[in-house]
Length: 270
Image (cartoon, rainbow, N blue to C red; front, side, top):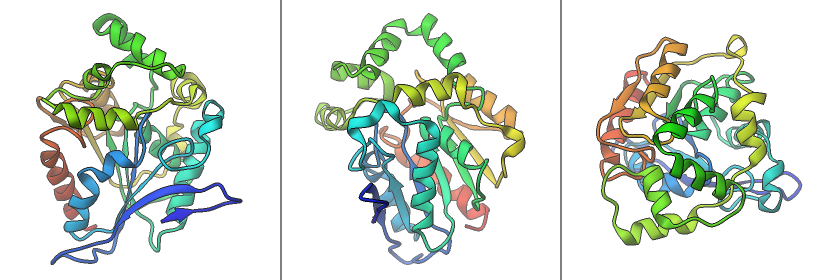
């Protein structure tokens, strides 16, 4: 599925419901994090939830994946990304459960200031307090990784081992790592500033649906302490997956996360 506005095409990868549990009424829309695209969900999560009976979709925000806007990536704000989610939601027959990872979780929080959805999931999400806390923690714990990410943010190239350190705590095969590395890209500096200081979520404006918060014990980018801070903000105890890193949907034990999320969706009646 593509969403179009004056030839501004957004890539949306869609996997229709399959299997015995076909046609659950509430679709799912996955929102990727920084430096990535919809592809990261199509590796495991879209096929898994399609087989579980959900219409599963993943949007590439403008400037990412197969979407328009790569040449203007540094101009895009978090509000622009929120608008992309709005466009993707508008193409669906029913409002979806939104599932956002990292920066995508921040975008989902901003979307909830403006619209209602049946449910939302924040995976290793930038907390509502922004990136400053996580960045400060990296200054002391992983200054080398922080420097490499800043280099990538500025449009520079980094070695594939930087991706491994940033996303994975479990072993990842070299060929898979190189394939993921080939998909990684520059991120909007404006969006990073928005998540740091200039456009933090306004909690009083949010229309909070049933909410699930997920983190990873060994996350180098959004540490478990930051995920717990998000949980404290929303009054929810997060689920922290032991022995896993930031890229939960791509780790070897991705299915543990997917099955936990599926159980939550079913408990909510979605």
